[in-house]
Image (cartoon, rainbow, N blue to C red; front, side, top):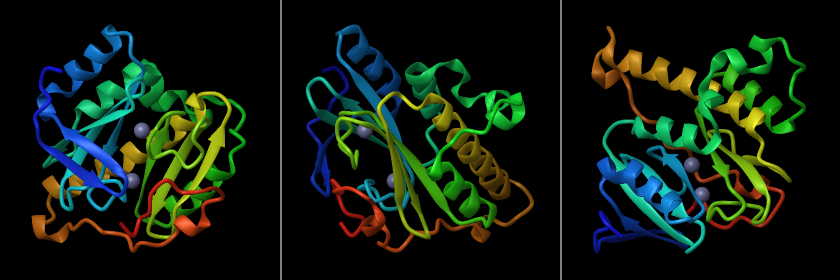
Length: 216
Ligand SMILES: [Zn+2]
Ligand SMILES: [Zn+2]
């Protein structure tokens, strides 16, 4: 397919074909136009799935062909927001649609409760939305949301796409990212900021078989 180089890179048991960052959106749309199922991820530096130690990456998975494509990025790849909106709807990043902001009943989710707790203590974390065919999914066949954190990894699985749970997680994540970005570009010296690579712990806390290991 257009934009796919011959370069490949492995991480754990996942084999990625490398694509250019600026082709990710067109690449994903091309999969959709070809009638294929797809989804995407952003990988942070230090993420268990990221083969690039100090870079971000966008992963686009072709769920129909079971192939994974990756594009490294020096900065947070803003195209992630476009991809997430295509996958989950324009209001997936809309803070006014969270349960607290909209006055709706709180969402019953043990994962969210634990995430809010560690987030309130400024524990470093990021998440992955696992589609049923996702190569990172700890419960293949179900939908899952996985959290990697400095205090261990945990996940929750669902029979249906957990859009409302995901929105809560995305809003928290982007709030933290914006704080981090303004700290980097604001009055603090650039050297004040470092990525905290979490220790390879926590996958043992997962309730199901892990498809990959943070120790990779
Ligand atoms: Zn990760
Ligand atoms: Zn995936």
